[in-house]
Image (cartoon, rainbow, N blue to C red; front, side, top):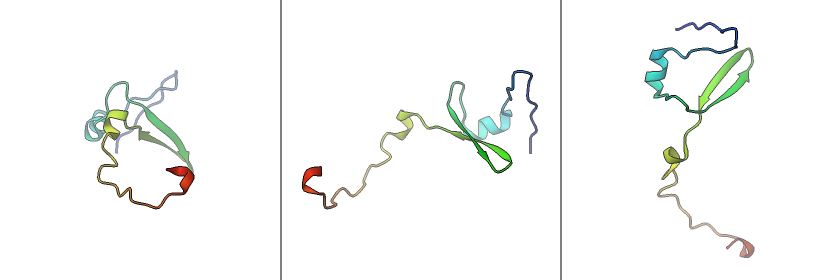
Amino acid sequence: MAKVTISPKYQVVIPKEVRESMGLRPGQKLEVFQFDNRIELIPVPSIKELRGIAKGIDTTVERDDDRV
């Protein structure tokens, strides 16, 4: 488990091992959540990474007439 220090500007550095294992890149967006008494950082996938996520989905569901 790595420890980080909050800078005077309230910044932290994500340890290299964590960045590499999660494939984090400079400029990548992270969502920040407060959960109970901890802070969680969740990587936000880019639009390119989401391409094809619904490939093969079943679209043969009944729809209301006004939704066609």
